[in-house]
Amino acid sequence: MGFKELSDEQWKFIKPFLPPQPITGRKRADDRKVINGILFVLATGCRWRDLPERYGSGVTAWRRLK
Image (cartoon, rainbow, N blue to C red; front, side):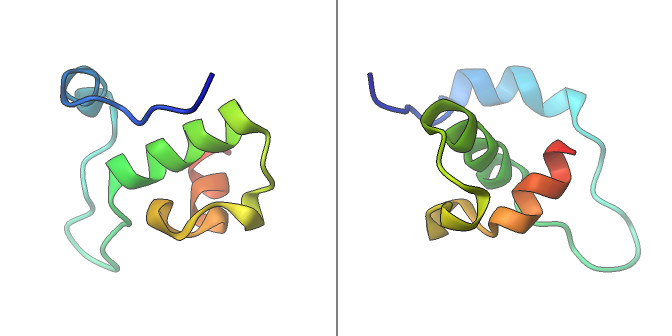
C-alpha cells in the first residue's frame, strides 16, 4: 500500500485544529506540506533527513511533530 497525501476534504477537516500563522516574525512553513511530510515518514518509516523535498525540511516536520 502506497502513501497518499491528504485530500482537500481531509485538509479542510484538519486545518481548523492547527494554530494560526504568527503575526510577527518568520513565516511558518506551509502547514499542509509539513503535515503530509509527517504522515509520509510515519507511513513509510523513512528517516526524517531522507524526507522528499516536496514535503519541505525533515527537521521542520520533526519539530512540528515534536
